[in-house]
Length: 261
Length: 248
Image (cartoon, rainbow over all chains, first blue to last red; front, side, top):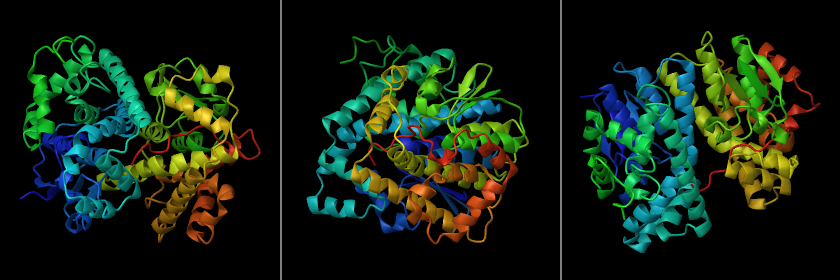
């Protein structure tokens, strides 16, 4: 029995980051699945572990850690196993820069679109009173606002347009960076790649007009290289929803512009 | 190594103080961040400079590569020196990085908003046209037009008060935020120093915070940082910072 327990949802966005980091590092962990669409993360059992009600959280011994990117850095430093940070401090700076860019600028735009088309409609079918009560249980005011918008479809046209603009700009930046280097932030596989894969694994499906082998060959090369790693396959096999099964798009050897509708 | 910095407030404070704490050698070049002069640097169009989430902050150039985002620059400076600005233990390091992350995400945008509201920058069209990031340019336009929306100001004030409460609680029995002095002290001071005058109520009856700010100023590296000021009150110097969270 491992002394590490990870409280997580799907191998996707924030939950997938420490999942994949732990697996790449070869650290066995107890998986505690929380169903985000059933609001498990706002129930008393979990709030006793992470009072902020955000996913993921990791217990190591009797300590609880939150914030997925900071958890990944901890995992890399606290356990033996292949290093997931480059050695040189300037490369490390680049890893952190890209993780922050994805966590705070690009990721929220992806997730606004994702919540609008996936999470919102998936939970909207529940009993209205139950949903109202579920929203009221959310500890952080910002998360309460976010869930209200997703559940009731309240994202404005301007907000969605701005998110789409950022997604297009972010894709352009990723393509340029991956044209310069084999991996996102340095010449070795790092936490930045784990972070980026969680954000973009289904990119050729979710943004077919912006990302495919014709327009963004470097992004596709990169996504396929990460998907080819045994731990990525093992991690994504832990997923339960159709959302994460979309990763299979990366098994296609060529995704052209015209084949995608 | 060349450090392009503004007045010693906000992110320029963090980077200069971290540099002096490490004792590393660097050429210092003063630029006026509040006049968007960063966007005329040779490295201005590099993605990591143009699209820095921090907004208008200092740039450290090594081998032609521009580095931005003060906490990560400070980590770099720590990494290439003796490593005295970060704890060694992985859990203590996680605490420091998480502390800084929450500060960057919640406190810094609020501080920049209040700072700019009180000290609006001049939005010269020719100057702003050089800014590569569409949303940073929009923040400049908003700040130059005047940030007066009551709900935003109230939200920002609340976040500053929360940050001070958190610091006051954290300092119970401690000299520095993480126990040992670290980047967390520099980054926290950097964003809050200018709030004392703008939002005195947040600092009222917070003796541990007041003592801690005093201790920060007594550090030789910080005194040297503040001595670089060209304005009488550098804590009143603001340029558009990180954006306030777009949604939850």
